Structure formats: C-alpha cells, structure tokens
Length: 444
Image (cartoon, rainbow, N blue to C red):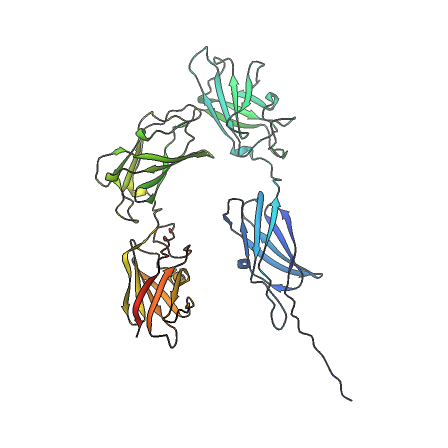
C-alpha cells in the first residue's frame, strides 16, 4: 500500500495583533503566532522624536498567547510610537514580519511626589510690602476641586511646633504655569520667609489629571533662592556656544556675558542666538566675536563669565558674578572632513581626514555611513566589500571585495551620518560630506 503525504509549507509572516499598556513602565506586544524576538527588534520613540531606552525584555508563549514584554526604567507618559522589525516565526523556513509602526498612549497614573517640591521665600524687607512663597511641584497640578493647589486649606505655615493657617488676606495664584504657585503673605511682619526659620506644610493635593498625593502634611523649609550659576558650557560651532544656567532668568542681555578664548582678554559675546527657559534652567546659545572664535572642532579653550548682579531670576533673585572655566567646557562641535581630505593612500586603500580625532572604539561601523561605488558604478556593501579603521583624525577605508573592479572609485557620505563621531566624552556625529569624490586608480 502506498501513501502520499503532502506537507504545506508555512509561508505566512507573523503580525502584531495588539499593543497593550500594562502600566506606565510596561508595554505588551501580542503576535499572531510563536516568534523569535529580541529587545533590539523594538524601537520606542517619544513625542519629541527621542529614543526611549528599553530596560528589560521578555517573551512568553502561554495558552497560545505570544507576548513580548517591554519594560522601562522611567515611567512613560504621553504619546509614543513603537517600531517592530526583524522578528521571525518558527517555521522551518523563517518568515519575517513586515516592518510596522504602532502608536500608543500612556496615561499618567502616578501620584505627585511631594518630596520633590521646592519652596522659595522672597522677603521684600519692607513692612508695607507683602512677602511671597513660591512652591514648585514636579508636574502640573490640579487648580480646582478639593485637592487644588489654589485651595488655602491645603497649606499651613509651621513655626517651631506651631501651625498657622493662611489668612483671609493671603492669596494663592499659579505662576508661569500650573506647576508653580505663588503664595502672597499679606502681613510681611508675621514670618521671616527667607532664612529657613519656617516651613510650609502641604496637605493632600492632586496633579492635573487627578492623581492624589499618597503622602500629605509634608513640611518643606522656606528659604531664599540661591543665586544661580553657570552649570555647563558646550561648544556648538566655530563661533557658537551653549551656556546653561541652573535658574530661570527673566531676561538675557548679551552685554552681561563675557568670553575669552585661550589667554585673550574677556569681551562680551557678539550676539544671543536663542534663549530657552524651562524646567528650572536657562539655556543660552551665544555667538562668539571673531576674535574669540574656536580654531577647530576639538577646541574647547573658552572661558565664560556672567557679570555681577546683572541677571535676575523670575523670582527676583540677582545672579552673582560667576565664571565657567575652559577646562570644564564640553565638546559639542561636530567634526568635519578637512579640505581635500579624501585621497588614495595605496592600492585598494584611501583615507578620509577629519579636523579632529575620531572615536576609535566603534570605527568598524563607520563603513555604514559611506557610499562607495566601483569603476562600473556598482555600490559596494559596507563591512563586506570594504572596511574602515580610525586612528586619531584619519579614517582609512580598505577595499576587501574579491575580484574588485580595477579603476576609479567614487565616495561620499550618506545624507545623515549615524556612526562616525569624534572622541569627545559624548561623541558628536560628523557633518555629512555628500559631494562625490573620485578616487583615481584606487584599484590597480
């Protein structure tokens, strides 16, 4: 007796059937069948276009449910996109999932953390003037209802062991958004709000989405705002630097910021390109005078100073004189290929010289940023047909393709460089060099 056995091959690629938000730190991805997947197959992007690090990954196959679990260190909140690719099923001949991007939204379900509240007192030093207490929460807060931060019943003043309610004449209003309130103490003789002798006691308040604080009656010392300082300086270009001040300033005037390149005398910046005030910081992009311009993309020898008592915070505190020394300036200046920096260095090798040293630890990946074409116009495969090696500022490219075509080759970079970067602590990706360069007689 003869039997004919027909086996149908599985040619159906897996699909994503659902993306589910388990909680603010866990996302579940459901597949249509059993798959092989790893964390690198998933990319999460936030509303600002920034990658979100996936802290943990697990895959389970239980009761015919095929689930990838992504976990995150920080709680998610808002809208995100999840891209999935390279996932394959477990057929004898693997079927790969079609690259797909899914949108998902994570609601804020986390209670406000009152331990992260900052409280600043402003004493007007005048019996006829009211005093002020500024309270900044870690997020936008409720401004109506029983748990509102505008409800005076949710606050008390503590002096020693004694508690005092806010008076009828005292006022509470939001200040520059719903994450900060301004408490006006009408009788300025009652408390000293600037020396740390009193505390503000915060009752049970809620965030803007109604999540109520799990702790309440949290006491925070009321003291004067500390004068802000320059917290960081980063080079951005030949004549451009970024200055970060750890306080929110009312206004920025170019005349009150001085710079000195190397041993030069300090002079005011040439111009202010932009000012961003947010989240307790003021970020200033300033233009350097021609006399103080940087010599190359590795140059960080620039000293930055702020003149005394010229800048004022939004709470009224004058900024003391402050200097940020050149030794602590960060390199944020992207490397570029020097003029005529691409040339043949030998049979099957050519070099690309940049204006500063490159990161040598990941130089094998630099091949991915190049477009190399042989004498016939065929595009070579990065990492297979040619390799890259960086030593100091020179990137050497070697043609490794078997039976490489003899003749002239052409090279340029991709429109956006992903891997080539300088040797700075936080590497700056290189500027693209998209003009095609001919490499005469590269392969002989």
